[in-house]
Image (tube, helix red, strand yellow):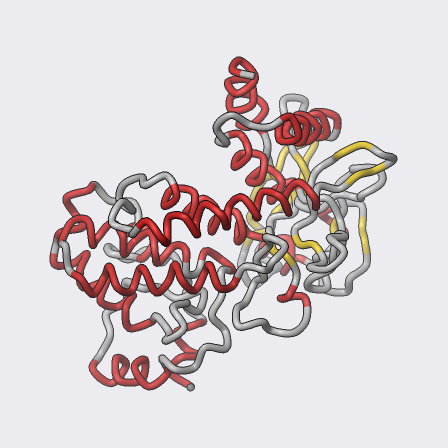
Amino acid sequence: MAFLAGMLQQSVAQEGENSWEKAQHQDGEWYASAEAQRIADNVLLYQHDNGGWYKNIDMADKLTSAEKDSLRSLKSKSVGTTIDNGATHTQLRYLAKVYEATGRKEYKEAFLEGIDYLLKAQYDNGGWPQFYPIREGYYEHITYNDGAMIGVMELLRNISKNNKPYNFVNAGRRKKAKEAIEKGLEVILATQVKVDGKLTIWCAQHDKDDYSPAKARAYELPSLSGKESTGIVEYLLKIENPSEEVKRSIRSAVKWFEAHKVMGEKVVWVKDTSYVEGYDRVVIKDDAGGPLWGRFNDIKTGTPIFVGRDGIIKQHLADIEQERRVGYNYIDNYAEDLLKREYPEWEKKY
Protein backbone atom coordinates (compact mmCIF):
# COMPACT_ATOMS: atom_id res chain seq x y z
CA MET A 1 0.00 0.00 0.00
CA ALA A 2 2.93 2.34 0.50
CA PHE A 3 3.53 2.36 -3.24
CA LEU A 4 -0.10 3.25 -3.97
CA ALA A 5 -0.12 5.98 -1.33
CA GLY A 6 2.89 7.52 -3.02
CA MET A 7 1.21 7.37 -6.41
CA LEU A 8 -1.95 9.01 -5.08
CA GLN A 9 0.03 12.01 -3.92
CA GLN A 10 1.20 12.85 -7.44
CA SER A 11 -0.38 15.69 -9.36
CA VAL A 12 -2.92 14.85 -12.05
CA ALA A 13 -1.24 17.29 -14.39
CA GLN A 14 2.51 17.27 -14.13
CA GLU A 15 4.67 19.31 -16.44
CA GLY A 16 6.41 16.37 -18.11
CA GLU A 17 6.51 16.02 -21.85
CA ASN A 18 3.83 13.33 -21.76
CA SER A 19 1.81 14.28 -18.70
CA TRP A 20 -1.66 12.84 -18.20
CA GLU A 21 -3.15 16.29 -18.72
CA LYS A 22 -1.42 16.75 -22.09
CA ALA A 23 -2.28 13.23 -23.21
CA GLN A 24 -5.96 14.06 -23.02
CA HIS A 25 -5.71 16.97 -25.47
CA GLN A 26 -3.81 15.69 -28.51
CA ASP A 27 -4.69 15.57 -32.20
CA GLY A 28 -6.65 12.50 -33.25
CA GLU A 29 -3.81 10.68 -34.98
CA TRP A 30 -1.65 10.84 -31.84
CA TYR A 31 -3.92 8.34 -30.09
CA ALA A 32 -2.67 5.60 -32.42
CA SER A 33 0.94 6.20 -31.35
CA ALA A 34 3.02 3.89 -29.20
CA GLU A 35 3.14 6.56 -26.49
CA ALA A 36 -0.64 6.92 -26.41
CA GLN A 37 -0.99 3.15 -26.07
CA ARG A 38 1.66 3.03 -23.34
CA ILE A 39 -0.41 5.49 -21.33
CA ALA A 40 -3.63 3.60 -22.13
CA ASP A 41 -1.98 0.43 -20.82
CA ASN A 42 -1.26 2.33 -17.60
CA VAL A 43 -4.92 3.33 -17.45
CA LEU A 44 -5.86 -0.35 -17.64
CA LEU A 45 -3.45 -1.17 -14.82
CA TYR A 46 -4.95 1.49 -12.58
CA GLN A 47 -8.54 0.38 -13.26
CA HIS A 48 -10.05 -1.64 -10.44
CA ASP A 49 -12.10 -4.79 -10.84
CA ASN A 50 -15.34 -2.87 -10.24
CA GLY A 51 -14.60 -0.70 -13.30
CA GLY A 52 -13.62 2.51 -11.49
CA TRP A 53 -10.41 4.40 -10.73
CA TYR A 54 -8.82 6.20 -7.79
CA LYS A 55 -8.19 9.94 -8.11
CA ASN A 56 -5.14 12.20 -8.34
CA ILE A 57 -2.89 9.85 -10.30
CA ASP A 58 -0.72 10.81 -13.28
CA MET A 59 -1.59 8.01 -15.67
CA ALA A 60 1.31 8.98 -17.94
CA ASP A 61 4.04 8.07 -15.45
CA LYS A 62 6.48 5.41 -16.61
CA LEU A 63 6.05 2.41 -14.36
CA THR A 64 8.63 -0.17 -13.35
CA SER A 65 7.84 -3.88 -13.43
CA ALA A 66 7.56 -3.86 -9.65
CA GLU A 67 5.09 -0.97 -9.73
CA LYS A 68 2.98 -2.75 -12.34
CA ASP A 69 2.90 -5.86 -10.18
CA SER A 70 1.80 -3.76 -7.20
CA LEU A 71 -1.05 -2.27 -9.19
CA ARG A 72 -2.22 -5.69 -10.36
CA SER A 73 -2.32 -6.88 -6.73
CA LEU A 74 -4.55 -3.92 -5.79
CA LYS A 75 -7.15 -4.33 -8.53
CA SER A 76 -9.61 -6.15 -6.28
CA LYS A 77 -9.57 -3.31 -3.73
CA SER A 78 -12.55 -1.19 -4.77
CA VAL A 79 -12.76 1.13 -1.75
CA GLY A 80 -11.70 4.55 -3.03
CA THR A 81 -12.93 4.36 -6.61
CA THR A 82 -14.51 7.69 -7.37
CA ILE A 83 -15.71 10.38 -9.77
CA ASP A 84 -14.01 13.12 -7.73
CA ASN A 85 -11.33 15.31 -9.34
CA GLY A 86 -12.15 13.96 -12.79
CA ALA A 87 -11.53 10.33 -11.86
CA THR A 88 -13.12 7.53 -13.90
CA HIS A 89 -14.96 9.63 -16.49
CA THR A 90 -11.64 11.18 -17.56
CA GLN A 91 -9.97 7.78 -17.96
CA LEU A 92 -12.96 6.59 -19.98
CA ARG A 93 -12.73 9.49 -22.40
CA TYR A 94 -9.08 8.70 -22.96
CA LEU A 95 -9.68 4.99 -23.53
CA ALA A 96 -12.39 5.75 -26.08
CA LYS A 97 -9.99 7.92 -28.09
CA VAL A 98 -7.26 5.28 -28.10
CA TYR A 99 -9.73 2.52 -28.97
CA GLU A 100 -11.07 4.55 -31.89
CA ALA A 101 -7.50 5.03 -33.15
CA THR A 102 -6.23 1.47 -32.59
CA GLY A 103 -9.19 -0.92 -32.42
CA ARG A 104 -7.53 -2.81 -29.55
CA LYS A 105 -10.34 -4.72 -27.85
CA GLU A 106 -8.84 -4.49 -24.35
CA TYR A 107 -9.47 -0.72 -24.39
CA LYS A 108 -13.07 -1.25 -25.46
CA GLU A 109 -13.65 -3.87 -22.78
CA ALA A 110 -12.19 -1.63 -20.06
CA PHE A 111 -14.29 1.29 -21.28
CA LEU A 112 -17.51 -0.74 -21.12
CA GLU A 113 -16.65 -1.95 -17.61
CA GLY A 114 -16.16 1.68 -16.59
CA ILE A 115 -19.51 2.71 -18.03
CA ASP A 116 -21.20 -0.12 -16.15
CA TYR A 117 -19.51 1.17 -12.99
CA LEU A 118 -20.91 4.68 -13.52
CA LEU A 119 -24.40 3.39 -14.23
CA LYS A 120 -24.34 1.20 -11.13
CA ALA A 121 -23.08 4.06 -8.95
CA GLN A 122 -26.06 6.31 -9.70
CA TYR A 123 -28.66 6.71 -6.97
CA ASP A 124 -32.26 5.84 -7.80
CA ASN A 125 -33.08 9.55 -7.51
CA GLY A 126 -30.62 10.38 -10.31
CA GLY A 127 -27.68 11.75 -8.34
CA TRP A 128 -24.16 10.38 -8.05
CA PRO A 129 -22.17 10.05 -4.82
CA GLN A 130 -18.54 11.08 -4.76
CA PHE A 131 -17.30 7.52 -4.08
CA TYR A 132 -18.66 4.15 -5.11
CA PRO A 133 -18.88 1.74 -3.36
CA ILE A 134 -20.44 4.21 -0.94
CA ARG A 135 -18.00 5.75 1.49
CA GLU A 136 -19.67 6.99 4.66
CA GLY A 137 -19.70 10.70 5.44
CA TYR A 138 -20.04 13.66 3.13
CA TYR A 139 -18.89 11.42 0.27
CA GLU A 140 -22.46 10.06 0.17
CA HIS A 141 -23.89 13.42 -0.89
CA ILE A 142 -25.05 14.10 -4.43
CA THR A 143 -21.79 15.59 -5.61
CA TYR A 144 -21.50 18.51 -8.03
CA ASN A 145 -18.20 19.57 -6.46
CA ASP A 146 -15.30 19.84 -8.93
CA GLY A 147 -17.64 18.94 -11.79
CA ALA A 148 -18.01 15.33 -10.59
CA MET A 149 -21.62 14.58 -11.50
CA ILE A 150 -21.68 16.87 -14.52
CA GLY A 151 -18.52 15.23 -15.88
CA VAL A 152 -20.26 11.86 -15.71
CA MET A 153 -23.45 13.17 -17.30
CA GLU A 154 -21.60 14.82 -20.19
CA LEU A 155 -19.92 11.52 -20.99
CA LEU A 156 -23.18 9.57 -20.76
CA ARG A 157 -24.96 12.15 -22.92
CA ASN A 158 -22.38 11.69 -25.66
CA ILE A 159 -22.81 7.93 -25.42
CA SER A 160 -26.60 8.17 -25.53
CA LYS A 161 -26.37 10.26 -28.70
CA ASN A 162 -23.96 7.77 -30.32
CA ASN A 163 -21.37 10.52 -30.77
CA LYS A 164 -17.79 9.70 -31.73
CA PRO A 165 -15.55 8.34 -30.32
CA TYR A 166 -18.23 6.51 -28.31
CA ASN A 167 -20.18 5.08 -31.24
CA PHE A 168 -18.87 1.58 -30.52
CA VAL A 169 -21.08 1.35 -27.42
CA ASN A 170 -23.92 -1.15 -27.89
CA ALA A 171 -27.57 -0.12 -28.03
CA GLY A 172 -28.38 -1.53 -24.59
CA ARG A 173 -25.82 0.63 -22.84
CA ARG A 174 -26.79 3.68 -24.93
CA LYS A 175 -30.36 3.23 -23.71
CA LYS A 176 -29.19 2.97 -20.09
CA ALA A 177 -27.04 6.08 -20.56
CA LYS A 178 -30.07 8.00 -21.84
CA GLU A 179 -32.16 6.89 -18.88
CA ALA A 180 -29.36 7.86 -16.49
CA ILE A 181 -29.05 11.42 -17.78
CA GLU A 182 -32.82 11.82 -17.72
CA LYS A 183 -32.84 10.87 -14.04
CA GLY A 184 -29.81 13.08 -13.49
CA LEU A 185 -31.65 16.04 -14.99
CA GLU A 186 -34.57 15.46 -12.64
CA VAL A 187 -32.35 15.68 -9.58
CA ILE A 188 -30.49 18.73 -10.94
CA LEU A 189 -33.82 20.56 -11.23
CA ALA A 190 -34.94 19.31 -7.81
CA THR A 191 -31.77 20.45 -6.03
CA GLN A 192 -31.71 24.02 -7.39
CA VAL A 193 -31.91 26.10 -4.22
CA LYS A 194 -34.92 28.30 -3.59
CA VAL A 195 -34.57 31.44 -1.49
CA ASP A 196 -37.79 33.24 -0.55
CA GLY A 197 -39.59 31.17 -3.16
CA LYS A 198 -37.19 32.06 -5.99
CA LEU A 199 -34.80 29.70 -7.74
CA THR A 200 -31.12 30.60 -7.35
CA ILE A 201 -28.20 28.23 -8.07
CA TRP A 202 -26.78 25.05 -6.49
CA CYS A 203 -24.59 23.99 -3.60
CA ALA A 204 -21.44 21.98 -4.31
CA GLN A 205 -23.14 18.97 -2.75
CA HIS A 206 -26.68 18.14 -1.68
CA ASP A 207 -28.09 15.68 0.83
CA LYS A 208 -29.00 12.48 -1.02
CA ASP A 209 -32.31 12.14 0.82
CA ASP A 210 -33.83 15.60 1.29
CA TYR A 211 -31.74 17.44 -1.39
CA SER A 212 -30.78 20.24 1.02
CA PRO A 213 -27.43 22.04 0.59
CA ALA A 214 -24.89 19.98 2.52
CA LYS A 215 -21.54 20.43 4.23
CA ALA A 216 -18.43 18.58 3.04
CA ARG A 217 -14.98 19.45 4.42
CA ALA A 218 -14.57 22.04 7.18
CA TYR A 219 -14.15 24.86 4.65
CA GLU A 220 -16.97 23.64 2.37
CA LEU A 221 -20.12 24.77 4.17
CA PRO A 222 -23.71 24.65 2.87
CA SER A 223 -23.74 27.57 0.46
CA LEU A 224 -24.39 28.59 -3.13
CA SER A 225 -21.51 27.57 -5.39
CA GLY A 226 -20.42 29.91 -8.17
CA LYS A 227 -18.04 27.42 -9.75
CA GLU A 228 -20.14 24.26 -9.68
CA SER A 229 -23.33 26.08 -10.66
CA THR A 230 -21.64 27.50 -13.75
CA GLY A 231 -20.87 23.97 -14.89
CA ILE A 232 -24.44 22.86 -14.24
CA VAL A 233 -25.91 25.72 -16.28
CA GLU A 234 -23.47 25.03 -19.13
CA TYR A 235 -24.72 21.45 -19.15
CA LEU A 236 -28.35 22.57 -19.23
CA LEU A 237 -27.68 24.96 -22.11
CA LYS A 238 -26.76 21.99 -24.34
CA ILE A 239 -30.07 20.19 -23.84
CA GLU A 240 -31.93 19.91 -27.12
CA ASN A 241 -35.56 21.06 -27.05
CA PRO A 242 -35.46 22.05 -23.37
CA SER A 243 -38.64 21.89 -21.34
CA GLU A 244 -40.13 24.98 -19.75
CA GLU A 245 -38.77 23.77 -16.42
CA VAL A 246 -35.25 23.61 -17.83
CA LYS A 247 -35.60 27.08 -19.36
CA ARG A 248 -36.82 28.46 -16.04
CA SER A 249 -33.91 26.83 -14.25
CA ILE A 250 -31.36 28.36 -16.64
CA ARG A 251 -32.87 31.83 -16.59
CA SER A 252 -33.19 31.84 -12.81
CA ALA A 253 -29.56 30.85 -12.36
CA VAL A 254 -28.39 33.47 -14.86
CA LYS A 255 -30.45 36.10 -13.07
CA TRP A 256 -28.73 35.13 -9.81
CA PHE A 257 -25.29 35.37 -11.42
CA GLU A 258 -26.09 38.80 -12.82
CA ALA A 259 -27.35 40.06 -9.48
CA HIS A 260 -24.41 38.79 -7.45
CA LYS A 261 -21.34 39.49 -9.54
CA VAL A 262 -18.54 41.33 -7.75
CA MET A 263 -17.17 44.32 -9.66
CA GLY A 264 -14.24 46.61 -8.94
CA GLU A 265 -12.04 43.85 -7.53
CA LYS A 266 -9.30 41.68 -8.98
CA VAL A 267 -7.54 38.51 -7.86
CA VAL A 268 -3.74 38.63 -8.16
CA TRP A 269 -0.74 36.53 -7.20
CA VAL A 270 1.98 38.40 -5.32
CA LYS A 271 5.49 37.49 -4.21
CA ASP A 272 5.75 37.10 -0.46
CA THR A 273 8.90 35.53 0.95
CA SER A 274 7.39 35.35 4.43
CA TYR A 275 5.66 32.16 3.27
CA VAL A 276 7.33 28.87 2.35
CA GLU A 277 5.75 28.98 -1.11
CA GLY A 278 7.14 32.45 -1.69
CA TYR A 279 3.84 33.85 -2.93
CA ASP A 280 0.27 34.63 -1.90
CA ARG A 281 -3.13 35.15 -3.54
CA VAL A 282 -4.90 38.40 -2.71
CA VAL A 283 -7.93 40.42 -3.77
CA ILE A 284 -7.24 44.06 -4.63
CA LYS A 285 -9.40 47.01 -5.61
CA ASP A 286 -9.39 47.70 -9.35
CA ASP A 287 -11.91 49.89 -11.16
CA ALA A 288 -11.66 47.62 -14.19
CA GLY A 289 -11.83 44.42 -12.13
CA GLY A 290 -14.56 41.83 -12.28
CA PRO A 291 -16.89 40.20 -12.72
CA LEU A 292 -16.06 37.77 -9.93
CA TRP A 293 -18.18 35.26 -8.04
CA GLY A 294 -17.51 33.42 -4.83
CA ARG A 295 -16.81 29.70 -4.89
CA PHE A 296 -19.04 29.74 -1.81
CA ASN A 297 -21.81 32.29 -1.30
CA ASP A 298 -24.16 32.90 1.59
CA ILE A 299 -27.48 31.26 0.74
CA LYS A 300 -29.63 34.15 1.92
CA THR A 301 -27.60 37.15 0.76
CA GLY A 302 -25.62 35.68 -2.14
CA THR A 303 -22.43 37.39 -0.97
CA PRO A 304 -19.10 35.50 -1.15
CA ILE A 305 -17.94 33.80 2.03
CA PHE A 306 -14.42 32.65 2.88
CA VAL A 307 -13.91 29.69 5.19
CA GLY A 308 -10.60 28.23 6.33
CA ARG A 309 -9.88 24.93 8.00
CA ASP A 310 -11.40 26.23 11.23
CA GLY A 311 -14.83 26.19 9.60
CA ILE A 312 -15.57 29.80 10.58
CA ILE A 313 -17.07 32.12 7.97
CA LYS A 314 -15.00 35.21 7.13
CA GLN A 315 -15.91 38.10 4.85
CA HIS A 316 -12.61 38.55 3.01
CA LEU A 317 -10.03 36.26 1.41
CA ALA A 318 -7.32 37.90 3.51
CA ASP A 319 -9.09 36.72 6.68
CA ILE A 320 -8.37 33.02 6.14
CA GLU A 321 -5.05 31.20 6.37
CA GLN A 322 -2.52 31.55 3.57
CA GLU A 323 -2.42 27.79 2.99
CA ARG A 324 -6.08 27.89 1.94
CA ARG A 325 -5.70 31.15 0.00
CA VAL A 326 -3.14 29.59 -2.31
CA GLY A 327 -4.50 26.04 -2.22
CA TYR A 328 -8.18 26.64 -3.00
CA ASN A 329 -9.87 29.02 -5.42
CA TYR A 330 -12.41 30.97 -3.36
CA ILE A 331 -13.27 33.70 -5.86
CA ASP A 332 -12.90 33.89 -9.64
CA ASN A 333 -14.60 34.87 -12.89
CA TYR A 334 -16.49 31.59 -12.96
CA ALA A 335 -19.60 32.69 -14.87
CA GLU A 336 -18.07 35.39 -17.09
CA ASP A 337 -18.12 33.41 -20.33
CA LEU A 338 -21.53 32.00 -19.46
CA LEU A 339 -23.03 35.49 -19.19
CA LYS A 340 -21.13 37.11 -22.05
CA ARG A 341 -21.36 34.39 -24.70
CA GLU A 342 -22.96 31.06 -23.86
CA TYR A 343 -26.25 32.24 -22.38
CA PRO A 344 -26.90 35.00 -24.99
CA GLU A 345 -26.36 32.44 -27.77
CA TRP A 346 -28.82 30.07 -26.09
CA GLU A 347 -31.38 32.82 -25.54
CA LYS A 348 -31.40 33.63 -29.26
CA LYS A 349 -32.79 30.12 -29.84
CA TYR A 350 -35.34 30.04 -27.06
